Length: 209
Length: 209
Image (cartoon, rainbow over all chains, first blue to last red; front, top):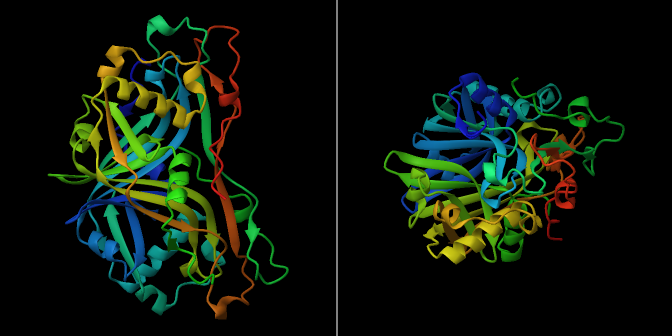
């Protein structure tokens, strides 16, 4: 049963959980000069992924109304097998395919910008100054449905060849996690403003069971 | 001077330092069905990036002798500005372009497999059972020179509009890091094998100053 720890999992809820936890998406485009991959902040908004950037961004304009591929990868651990060949990683990754549609409506774009902030720091929109109309007009928002999607998950320890199991070589997993340090206030912060809980105790939403 | 914290940095040494620190690359291909992005473990080997996988992998075969784009992104912090619009991330990313060349020579492939293990867990090849010839023949290795390459770095605190600086809203950075937990031994580990230092004290190479 443990012989195939890498597996494609067709579970929409698990894919959404990975997208809720991730911070950065790698967005692939086919351009005339060849394939391009752009790291971007993203937000999960219900059952779609939102991307955004400046309306002046050539690459983002290239992604609008075009076929894109969006990958979000979480690394959970380093898998040390007795054999070099069977070294691996525990990870969860979602790869989405589809057409990125431009969000033109200004109110919808305003809601989308809230989603970006809330995706990364839940609770933050209560405090932050909301975007002005000028800022909204400067921002391009793209939406991609979580529809055609591949989820891959590897969990658990190393899977070695039977002949290697008696080797006196340590084998196991080094778990990895993204951890927040103590918040660093801005140099020009108004004196006396306390660190909010969402910054002091920042953490990603718990993984689906 | 702090008005443009996002910047493209043309510094080969800094790009190599990012590639030394990263664990996962997102590899972009142009396929007949559209753009595809694949998360992959990679290794930095001198001034080239190595990718590998099963010779049976359709996607890896598609990347061989083809134009690819390889992105490695490190997230260093969440940037909380007074305004929602100026929220950002501190990050370092390298995006490489070029042709992925297949490494055919068996000895060169053996050295490459060592590099993968050493890239992820420095010191591990001293202990792990080396790959057999059969394992090497099952493994495809691709090499991409660090040549045509874009490095982007954002560091430091939020950059707000002057009119927002007096808002009583906390602003600053939540630093993020990839941290290793206590190693978890394999269920079937030979009793008495101690946890090696490279697993107990695993950390990425320090960032370039």
